[in-house]
Each structure stands twice: as structure tokens, then as C-alpha cells.
Image 1: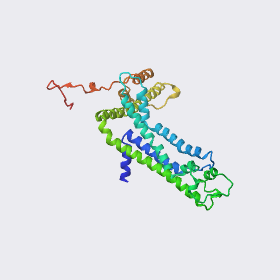
Image 2: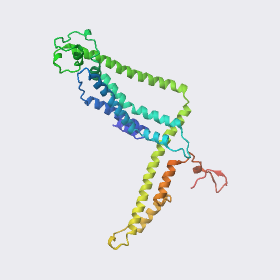
Image 3: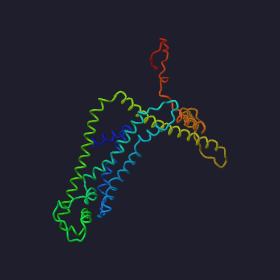
Image 4: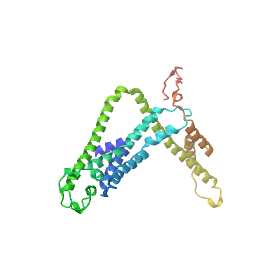
Amino acid sequence: MERVKLVLQYFQSNSESISNGICIILAMVSVKLYTSFDFNCPCLPQYNRLYSMGVMVVPPIILFFLGVLVNRHTGVMMDEWLRPEGNRSKNPTVVKYLFSAMLQRAMLAPMVWILVSLLDGKIFICAFSVSVDPNLFSGLPNNTGMDIIKIMAKVPCKEEGIFKNSAFRKAVSRYVRCYSQAVGWSIILFFIVLGSLARLIKPCFDDHAAFLQTRYWSNYLDVEQKLFDETCVLHARDFARKCVVQFFEEMREAPLLDRPHFSVNTRDDWDLEDEDRLHGVTRQEQMDQLLNKWYYSKPELDVSRMYRPQLCPVCKKKNLCSDV
């Protein structure tokens, strides 16, 4: 139970961890979908390979775009790429980093689907049973009146009467499944070796300081967008509350709408709190201009004025003095 809590805390720690958790969930969903999918090969020479390739390709494409859709890096990357430059210059390296992170996570679920289908082998048997040389196996049904291609196309179908109590179909299926599993394990080995070499060789040719800067600013963009959304929610709530209270205060004097109203103390407390968060924004046009300014000219990344040194009232020098 403690391990489960630790895993949940990791996935809730930041947006990158949340994206990793979503991608893992999509990978598990792809495995569940494949195992519950009822694969029925047409057993016709002209449709076997087409149907198999459709099952092999279409679901991974759907899972890929679904991974792109639910990945938070996608929205952050597009916002940074398409925004006007304004007061803040763009960093193409950060956009490339976000695109790479988004692409890696979006590719996880499709690759899991493809690898599971290759290791299972049913799709491979349906697609390439026609390509197998029947002379390699004994027990070929030769009293059916059909040509060899049609007979080999019916190998994936267990219910076909021509293969009743026949070891030929099992031998061909086992032969093609071995090829399918070999391809699947080869792909897994390739990605493992590629990832290991990348981890070992990349530090030798990459500027680690530049990588840290890129990763920092990509995380900054994500956190900035999240904080901006949270601040907008708080500001909108206070603005709406101010408008609602003002509406009912104006309607108090109407004889037909005489209802209990807020107390003076409560209204004063709310007014003080609203003034702190509204920052002088009292009209819709002001808020629209503020949002327009944020989009077209984001503030430069300089917070030095927030840490301006102050003169100590005792020693009259610039230092860090306590306010207590």
C-alpha cells in the first residue's frame, strides 16, 4: 500500500510526472484493447494482408493522436511557438525540447500495440500465410479443388473444414508466428540498445549546461501557464462576486425585491479582499486589455525590481534587513 501511495505521489508531483502517468495508462489501455479485440481474419487472398495492415496501423495512429491530445507539453509547445514575440524573445531550443518530450510520450502507446501484436502473432499469420511455401510442410489438403493460394489464405481460420484434424495448419501458423515474434523481440532489442547508447554517448557530445537551461525554461513555461490559469480563476471569481454583490446592493431599494442582504462587516471584508486581488480592474474593457497585453507582449524574464535592496534604517546602508 505504501508503494502505491509513493507512485501516486510521484505522478501528482508535477506536470511532467502527470504526462508520464497518462502515457503509461494509455499503454495499458492499448494492451487491454488488443487482448479484448476479436481479431477475425477474412481468409481471402485479396483481403488478408489489407485487413491485417489496417489492424496493425490504424489503432496505433489513433493512440498516437490521443497521446498528443492529452499531453500537456503539446499545449505549452504550441503556445510558445505561435505567440507573438513581444517583450520576451523566443527560444527555439525550448520548443524543440517540448516537441521531443511530447513525441516520445505519444509514441509509447502505439509502440506497445505494435509490439504486443507482433509477439502475439495472429496478425502476422493472417497477413503472410499466403507467402509461405507449402512444400516445406507435409499434410497439405489436396482434395479440395482449390488452388494453393486460397488454401494458404485459410490457414488463420481454425473453423475451416479443410483443416479439420490437420497438422498442416498448426505447422504453418507456428512457422509464421516464430517470424512475428522474432521481429517483435528484434524491435525491443533495437530500442533498448539505442536508448542505452544514447544515454552513454549523448553526454560526451552534448552541452550539459545548455541542456539544463533548456529543461529549466521548459518547466518554467509549464509552471507559468498553470499559475496564470489559477490566477485568472481567482481573479474571475472575485470579479464575479463583486458584480453579484453590487447587483443585489443596487436592487435593495426596489419594493418588490426586498430580501435579506449581506451584513456591513461581511461586505467590507469582501471589498478589502477584492481590492487586493482585482488590482484596480473594475470594467470588462480593462480586463480585455490586460489579457491582450499578456498575449501580445508577455513580460520579460526579469524580476530584479522585486528584490531591490533597501536602506537599513539603522545603518543607512544597502543590506538585507529584517522587517521584524
